[in-house]
Image (cartoon, rainbow, N blue to C red):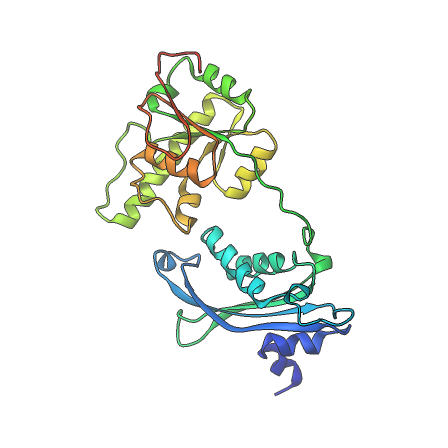
Length: 306
């Protein structure tokens, strides 16, 4: 076996040592295994599988004595914490995505110069399927920078009666002019959705029915753009874009997804408002639900908002 082939399947610590060009210290996390729902295939949804992490972080040698002071070094706990944060943020389809996010989070640490991340799925067959990436501080644009927190929006839930109301534009105008971004939620149209008799497929159909109605709503006011990912929402909120929420991706990718049935669109909107840390929820055309944030219920025949 040639050295190139041997190193291709060697532990990341050997890979780091072989590819190093400048003297660096290295800390490593070996064979850290967690159970997580991950994967792009339908058979991987709703199922936990074992994922193994091997990570090597190259750090600049410490100048002067360490003095046995943990605050002067990059702790192993920070590496494990980076994995946990990214796994808890949302459900991820690709190992490549997870590896890149873990690497970028580790490179935020001031001591980290370069990181080798190998992630493997252990339960897809009698073998390990994996990806390995290398990232350096110079190659990650936000390394060492403070994360810019997305603003806290107002969420507006509209019943179908409210969507059809002549007051719709006035409500949107009033909320869009206030001091927070506006995200609009709707339920499914009044037409009956297909019924499958199977919980997982029916959930998908019910979410897609809401998304169809979201596009109908967006067509009534061209300022409103349908968005489906958290990244899109964060960008839109920071740039003053009015959004209509298409729920499938965020609901299906959530680590702690809503327990409510998608047919209960108002309960789904309450979950979403909590998930994105909304400052307020307006409900037009229905009674105010219980929520952990301020809620205001508006009648469809009430043109002015409080």
